[in-house]
Image (cartoon, rainbow over all chains, first blue to last red; front, side, top):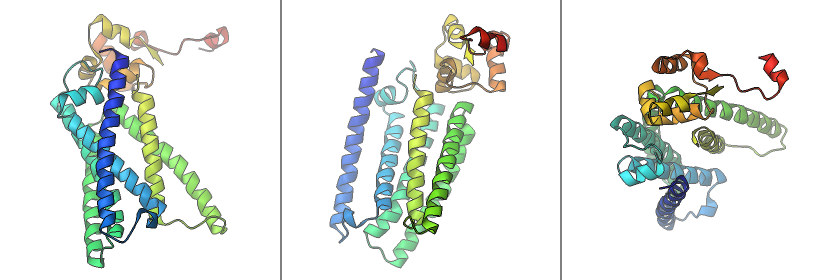
Length: 214
Length: 74
């Protein structure tokens, strides 16, 4: 297969997988909304951002995990030019990254799910305990990824962190100044997290694509 | 930083993944070094030099100067 054909096959495969997962997520959200009195319009913009990002992270994680098992998907998506099967160590590394992505996605969805379901105080406490537990697991997973990465991946992670720091600290300062002067509206910490995750996702994808793309 | 990694690798008939295995880095890292998108650390540069049994300066060199002034500066 030519490199152009490989690229088109990869794009079509990703689009199809994304459409399938997006459709499934949309159906689940619709079903959840139907069972409550809350509609999408009632949710804050940060909840919508968190839901979109959470679903995307879970989707990417599931596709990455499947690609380590399904040979054809792996050849199409992860290593189109590798020219040989994935080693068990690399497969485990991809699965670890997939797990961390899925955990991050679920952690973003759980607080919103608590609102949508109009959960009581005890349920909210359980949800928060679950978020804390998953956060601990995800942090451990991130440390493992850092330790098992080569210098190239570590550079991408560090560069993403640096870009996010400079962009977000500047934006935070300007917003805080405007808010203090009563010119800009007040942001909640959940709003700030939604912005942070959005900026981190965009920075991570763009930096990775620039470095990895041949 | 420019390098001759792709040529040296091709001379030995190795794929990027083969070279990555020998150096203890990913195929993506080898690709990024070859395409000039990543400058290897000093320890990795020494590992590359040892693998090909060549001095580092034979494999890696500063970007080719485009003007005489730039060449004199080097």
